[in-house]
Length: 512
Image 1 (tube, rainbow, N blue to C red):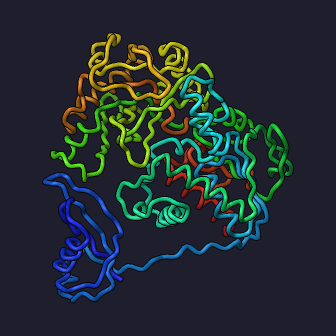
Image 2 (cartoon, rainbow, N blue to C red; image 1 turned 30 degrees about the vertical axis):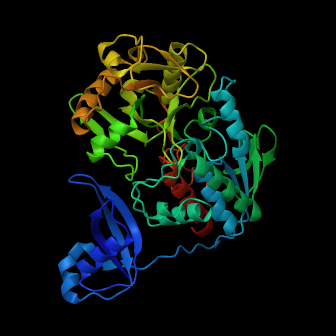
Image 3 (tube, helix red, strand yellow; image 1 turned 180 degrees about the vertical axis):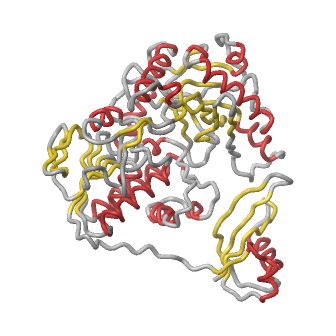
């Protein structure tokens, strides 16, 4: 089997056109091919660029000519055994890290118990819908907490910077549980919040079928330590004993971080804060593709800017084509936002976080000062929005002019809990506001129309990643059977990297 790269065809061409381009490239006929990777190139015209698998021979002359665009391919199977004869594991958190650790362990005969303070998806959806329609916030089950984690109510983006080949196992498990097969090869794979919810439910049912159990609505509150090991894990309802204890906390598990600080080493970690920006999706499509064509996917973007002299870094984060801004609050009298898209990405607006990295210079000393900073900012946003869970919003032109917005233009805020017109300059320190304004000037040069005066900013985006890192070595703390993983522990960012961290932790438990 050969892997052939850089097969480039116009976006409006189909299977037979790709096949002809492959045959032209290798100078021989083929019966069929399999798409391995697919990306889009809109620099000069709009093309799809493929990597394909072909089961044929290629002449030495052609092989040499293609150089880096051809190689032998062999599917690597992930073989995992329970060499350590682990019998049981307690996992706190039913987000991607916890679910994939549980799935991997349960498949190898380990009895897993998953503790999750939030609700299962079926109930969590109802709770969030109620909140979006004016109901009260449930601090234990919301956009941040509950089965599937925060990513369940996002774009369902499955991108990852990791080159670890085991990432493919994550995608296979997603597909086996109902995700579309194109995530196996799409350069920017996503499933959308609607499909992701169904996938997570299927994964839960498989874990249960393998002997695992879920305890929803149950909060992890303490640990019992004996002989330099974790002897039991205590919740607000019961206590549990097991061979291994895996902490798959989300990045908003502030009370758990504070509690754990008395037992294990936790350090401050830089993260990023800012706003959600909304444009019309049609404008983003035109800026990226330079043409209008309904056959093209909704366009996305990724932008970044660093000013070394001022020591500031601003970037776009969690871009949601055809999506909505959602209220991601998890504590009463505080407010933060996130982005979410359905699989079809059919909403009028595109949104993304525009965030500035913050570190000790802004956060101040102390390993938990990032939590204090988040809470301070979110309280300001809550009050600026009217203290009733509405988000403060502002036109981009007004943000630059440091004046409250009094009316909006053609781009309408999509925040589901409602909004209040405000002046977002009142929330962050001047250094953050200035850095974001400077970066937006640069972004406008890279993506035409990005600094549209009527673009909408919604405050505040504060949960980009964990404000702490739980120190570990080989997936263990100073207590060998206590293993912090995933985004909350400070070792992942996003669905795939969190799931991969859970998988790798399970391998460590089983084999090393």
